[in-house]
Length: 234
Image (spheres, helix red, strand yellow):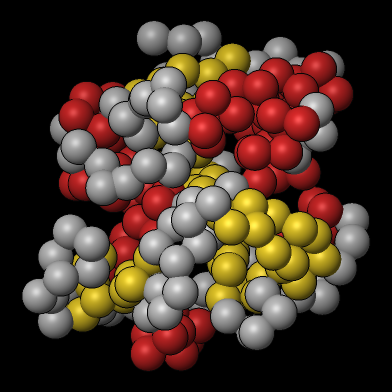
């Protein structure tokens, strides 16, 4: 197990996945920028059967893209563990989608919340197919005033890349908001592209449908990678 502090990269690693190649670069850039003594390790979802035991050595969790996961229950357990124990938690793309499902099931009271990709016949599809695919697309995202995303980026908007076909089902947005989830980024059309919890509830709980880690491949330090490393280090 890694020495503390360390970040668990929860997902099923593949060198063919662009985001998986980008994430270590993003974290290395953040570590160097912050002069932080921190490490990270890939944690396969199939290896998570008891999150409190399997993740006990980690200070933070990044639930990475490329779902469906081999073990969806393991990914959800990692998210629940990080949320309940106030460990810094970042989810990008599929990670964000599963953060929505875990939050819906265990906080918002939608116990049957599910993902349309893995259970298309589900009664409570909190994550549904997007009207238009965002696979290998990019576009503007606009951050809500006073949000953690706005503070981390230091500006009102950014251009970000995607590789996804699923996102939040708008029919359940109000229920999640009532449970204190804040939708903190939207695209030009006003569609939800990120969510977070206020600091009073969780010190770092941020999920994005876009993949900010991709910026590292062009030599740019991703603001969210820097924010996660800073939160994990503290």
